[in-house]
Image 1: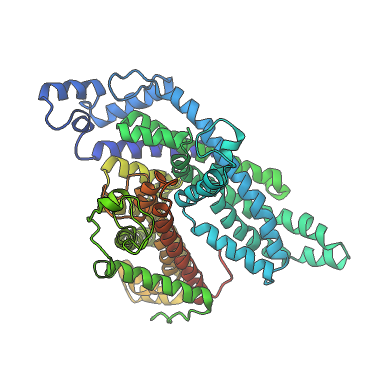
Image 2: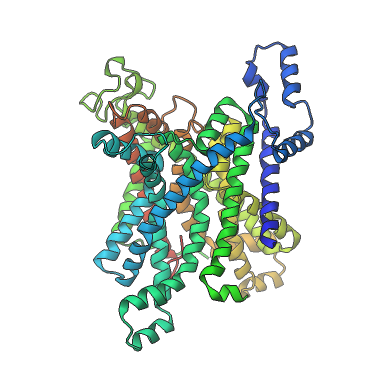
Length: 302
Length: 277
């Protein structure tokens, strides 16, 4: 309950912020749409049609109202295209991409991080951490094209771009997920080292339990909370990174929609997409908090 | 009150320092080092592979890739240093005021950082540059607008713990003003974590500028930038992969170097075991 109030408050703040920005900008989208040499009459007609002759709070109000009722349309002539159906078509694709990237990140990072912690300061540990430092440094908009050259052009295993099948998802998901895998493996290692120092680990070992159950059942379960926290926060980075990744692979998601809206100067579309991104991120963070309780009985009791 | 000069040890630190020096050198001496002007075109060499004439190959209209990488270092240096300095300044002032004076001001300032942190990743910077148009100043503004919150939260935490220390209490008892206490007593003692944060801020801003330029929202068209060059290269992956390859390598290497440098600085400045990031 308190969580949803916080989400609502942040959404209102985000809406205010992006609307204020649009109204504070010197210059006018109408100039860009019609060109600087357009007749004054035409400009005023368009400005009125778009609602730009209204004060900013009226613009904000009508935007919010039409957003809530689902009546929001493109802010470009001829004002026909509804915005929400476009988002409804694009959002699942972006979420699919983000969750696939997350799955790849988790699948790589957890074994790597746990292994590095279990054998800390060994060659495996050093190799894993060197890989993770390198993985964080790779820019997605570069890794993507390099994967395309190798796996789509040279080896011809996977499609260059587009969407529609599982094979289309592989390269974008890897591109988006590598940085998360790299960062998460460091977090996992640190959390595991922390957990392995606890007294109950010493007790479990002293009882003569086999090393593997101690590692996974005792230590790993206690390392899960910091891992979950980071995963929730990094979901935002994934959504941001999805914009770049979608451009590389022509993936028909929210990033592509946003960039198209920016190019066309369709501010209604751009605002709605930014808000949808923000809402997805906040909702994911709220879900992460719920996941705490599922993972850790100590949180549930509070 | 002076900072102990951090002793940087290890291979990573040396690698990081070398990369940082190379980067600054490339940016400063770009006109001397570059084989041609960034505006020069060489139509006979359009999209040509690396050769003696164009060591790292040529791009659209035969622009020299090496030249654009060297001048691109300039753009990334200007943007990242300006962004980090401005973000750290704004964040330190806001965090200091919030942490020292507490009360409604603290509440207001921290709630506004919450709103900024509600935007995922680079999204807000994309929105701001899209609205303001592509230019270096707008990129710096967008990245500062979204980047100061980290410094504010960090410094606020430092202030909260340091303001109870005896030397701060003593300064207050002697009648020092809040501004003086924050600037002369608290800031020097909280500088270590801020410096570490700023060191990690440089590669963050370099990547962000390159991403924005890749999306066509960073530098104006035609300006040499690593991100813009990769963007150009993605159209010719089949026939001219070198256009995307080399600027991306420069970018990855620079970011890697600064990450190593940040790690080494943190180890040198912070006696506590590794923090999360």
